[in-house]
Length: 277
Image (cartoon, rainbow, N blue to C red):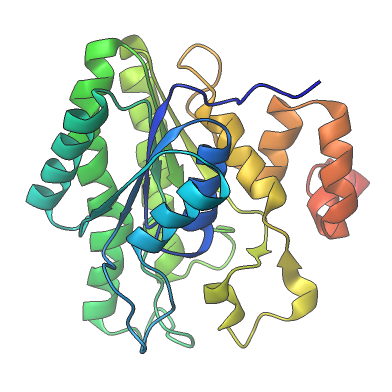
């Protein structure tokens, strides 16, 4: 028996959806029945950057999933542009159920805490924290009016090294927990999703420090993004979890076992108590 789409009838905004995990999540949401708003800065290809545009993602959604997609070119660091983007979504579909805050700026390789130029750290703060906050504030009135909504903030892989990037991601994790407490009364769930490892995407493959053995397939991450998008303020909110943890907590034993078999051993080991590893 074919499984029913898990996000049928929902309208989901995915930022940073021109390429990489944002693109994959947008397509996964569409495959699960959502109408997807593809948000990103790229309106056309730039040979100096990674390939991908919002229009290509939207076309791929319609071609490969048969779903509905709305491509909107938007710089999420521009508050006015974000408000215009949300207005376009409401004009088209009249509601916003899910926001996946995926857009991020990652500093170039080799830039450490002491050596990073101030302009790069400022750009990370603008994109990874302030822009995400702009989009949250813009979608909240529509969610609060229906007393239902789901906000997912994408975080970093770990908090172990204390890099400038991780500092911005830690800020969003703290904001996630605070917003979850504040918005539960409004029926809005807020969670943060951490990719367990280096997920196999074009951007990650440019990092010379990442070896092929370090790569993790995207499947469990995408499933975790869907599982979070299904939650309500009553079922699951205020959590900062890896895709492995989310699969364990929100899926069934067979699904957990399937992902344990296709992911590196460290994926499963991360779910064991420290003394058992």
